[in-house]
Image 1 (cartoon, helix red, strand yellow):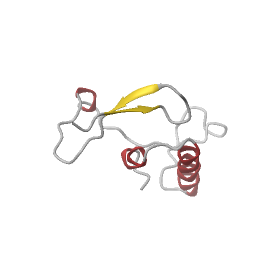
Image 2 (image 1 turned 135 degrees about the vertical axis):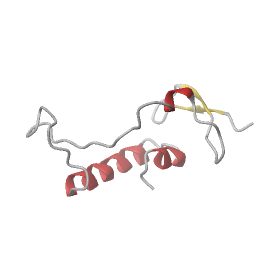
Image 3 (image 1 turned 90 degrees about the vertical axis):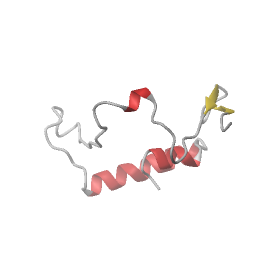
Length: 85
């Protein structure tokens, strides 16, 4: 009942959006290995040996992502899914 026809942010590509609500079952692809946030400076660490989560770089990149999503008018629930609220 919550599905709606929307557009891919910043484009005319149609998508069907089904926002998840509290108590909804997780989709099949969400089971398995937990997602972990990682942050690397590929110029200085091309082998991704040093995770920079929790550093000022992570905060700066989150702000860049927030701005990019706002620019393409991404739905607010996208920010929630990405943990950017």
